[in-house]
Length: 172
Image 1 (cartoon, rainbow, N blue to C red):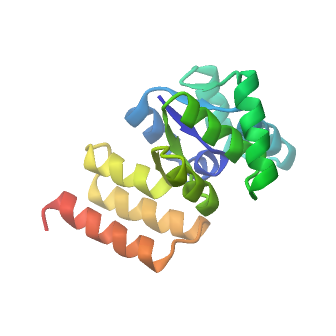
Image 2: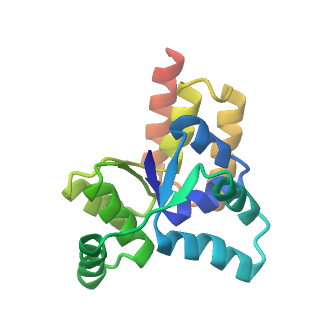
Image 3: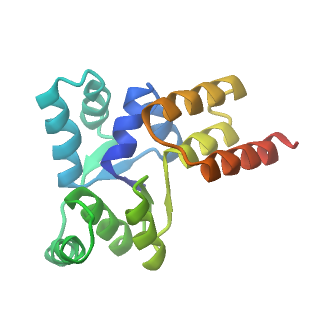
């Protein structure tokens, strides 16, 4: 199981690739603040892609975590001492306390995850993993990266890293 933050669910839904998450990780956990941001927030703005997340929740391969008192306390402390939003803080705390991998794109959340020794990956890492595991062809991988770069900013370092890693996967 993996813990997913809002941005990853939103971006994967927008490019029609949310199912890759299920193929790679079977079960995905989200925290209550992520459900509120993605599902409730998506409904409020009329985001059509929210249907993918709602379907995944109905099929129960995306489940909402019940945070215990200590997790709530730690998330609040993270929000008080960093610029993390509630969903990022709760996701980070749950991944840490339950020894799960965190799926997150936010730079500060990734920095804090690194400091806490929490395993993490992002949307690009997930797409690369899907290609490496044979869940998509190279042309689908390229298309996904193009679509992602239209939705989210990818730094030149990230692009170079992607190209290097895809070359390794392809044996180039």
